[in-house]
Length: 256
Image 1 (cartoon, rainbow, N blue to C red):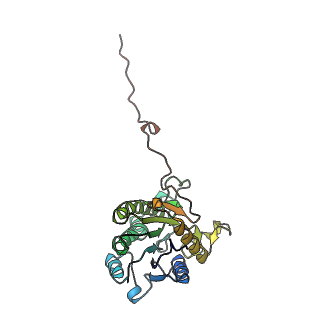
Image 2 (cartoon, rainbow, N blue to C red):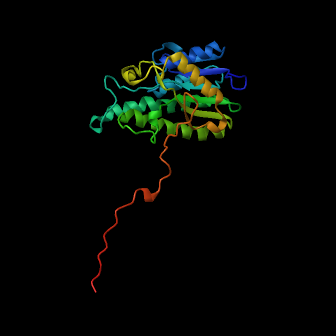
Image 3 (cartoon, rainbow, N blue to C red):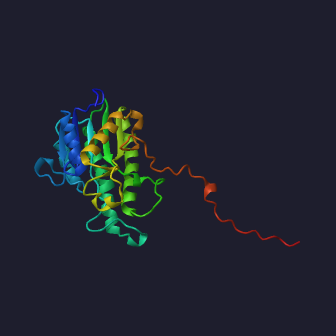
């Protein structure tokens, strides 16, 4: 990273996971002060993103003002349940858990951690998202809960970016798609991935940090992949009433 984009203090939420741990290590290698939090950590570095009190307590323990916050949490399989293949597989409890971890948790992290960031200068709040959260990119269906939760996260990021801009006009709030990374989350689905696009966590971390380095203020509120290419969350174009014509009532011709 260059001096202009180099953070001085960073926070990584989910620092025990494959990507989160690699991010924390990569940042530390750059001599950046890193505070890592995770559900599996004990003591001052514990956080449970499904518990707002835990999130607030973790935020209160952060020292200094971080100019980079990275939320590297997420869940694809809920318990022993694989992602839904059809609507007959939908379960309200599993859907709620998918949203709790993938969308609500990061939003609550933003609620308590964004106020810690400086009110001036370049700041970055980033969270892991996924290309499958793009409505326009959905051509295969399935994975209802994960897709919907990530789509919700992308909307939350957009909205957070708008509000944070009022607090700091140089703030950047983004969602990042890391690609398919060799972690526990993707392990059951790696059979369909060619070796090249399957990234090791340390490579994925460096790629994501490279994307963050290249972000501009005008990129805030957007979703980017590991190559720095924008992923349009909708991609479905503007709604036009003519695209979805309503049935018209057949007219009855009057007899003369």
